[in-house]
Length: 150
Ligand code: SF4
Image (tube, rainbow, N blue to C red):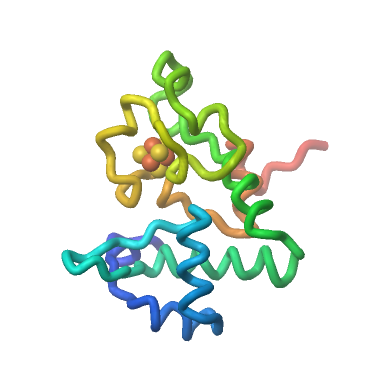
């Protein structure tokens, strides 16, 4: 069950790298690829939440078990229907790169529309979606994951 605790930036990049069994450089690459948005402290240190860690674990699964590239994962996440969580399709979307672009998730796109411009993506429902290998399809298609079409 998700709690606010899940979104608190508690983990250092070293702890995240150790958990994922990758190098810190690799964790930074995931950020540079726009897949995760670590919090930055006043001294510009990266800090990650448990939710960020779960996102990164999902990315590792996409890579290790599904043979995906970072570019492919970026494109997959670009299909998240962010507008559905921001009041629906409207004129704002016409000004938002995230609506048109397939280059990456909305939080990695610029410029975003007026509704997102003042928001911290880390606090946004879209960034906080429980995206993982099992839920991604149902989130993209806005469907109950257990609903099957006969
Ligand atoms: S605030 Fe950020 S994460 Fe939320 S919909 Fe806008 S761009 Fe995406």
